[in-house]
Image (cartoon, rainbow, N blue to C red; front, side, top):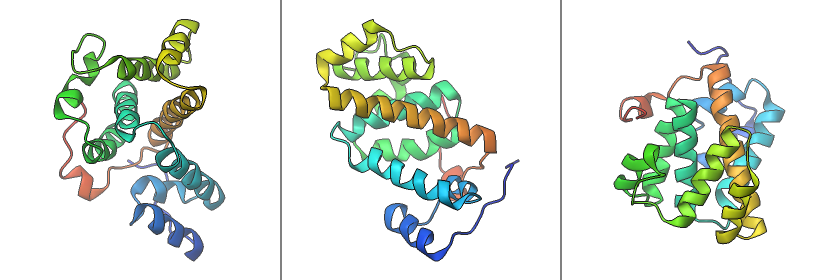
Length: 177
């Protein structure tokens, strides 16, 4: 059961949420219990999603892997749709849990997924950083680290608040593998 009620928004925040995301999903409605932090969260999430230069499909793979590690049905269901819209193949989605040995992933994807797992474990080693640096610039390393870190926070907030899946997603979402 969700631990906080879904909140309404003041008109300015409501308009901004709709501009960015359309109808606010349950995560934003739960966060809405603290309007100032919801506004800050919104802008940060928007920057990660839309102001990054690394491929969106790569970042969606990272987010899906975060959802798997965190066992976050909500994050998985929402980002599965986004991953598909970003042209992540069904083969990659199916192989994601075993990415280390799956032939579907290239070296750049493996480096980003290793970074994701290391961020989730709070243990980004020098070896993982060195592998990332073979494929990505310093700015891209920051983007990928922020992506992994932000979505680790998302899964933790979803868990803390026990945010319920939105009805339109719940009825059509495949379960977390």
